[in-house]
Length: 248
Image (cartoon, rainbow, N blue to C red; front, side, top):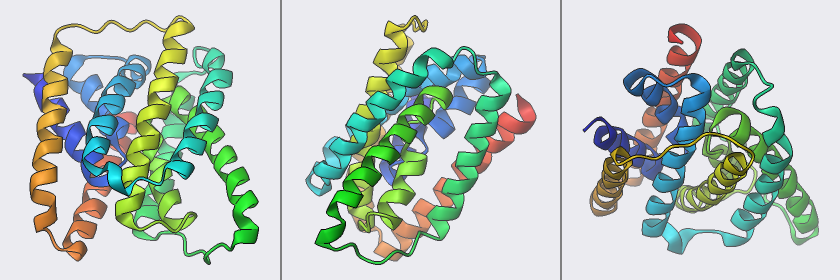
């Protein structure tokens, strides 16, 4: 039952914001399942992969695949090169990195970057930007268990000038695949991951949340949906910061 509730929460957060799945999964796994920060950071990737890809299916027509694929490929390289260093990184530094990223994302969700539209001449620059952003996301995913959406969603809004629907769909697509690649790389390099029957309830919770969001989110006005995104994202970040900084 606990896994079902966690799945509902993570699925709703990912479906509404395209981010924050790991930020809410990590403290929930630590608090309700008694996992350590490092354990929770690994198991959160499983939840993020499921929540991202299941919610992506309901929004796939809005996905900007060129941007998403570049980010996924670069993040895979970032995960591959940083995975060997994860066990050497103390939990304090994982918490510190997680906190900095959370604060950055919180600022950007309320005050998105206001950049000018890029021209065709800037296309190569955008490709290089995607590669560097992807490498950073891969490292972030490996070290913290974040799916990367907490950083990716604000970047898609501000840097790539996508509307919120496109940013949400693209974030879900990229986060799902980059988290999956990071998870596979870490397991191949010796990370211990044991999936039991309780994760069936986690999947059910995520699917139910995605179905309900698809059915009822269109009933909300755009301004209301924006506020729901901002408030929910803020609540997730605050919850994670309190748990990681004060309760761990």
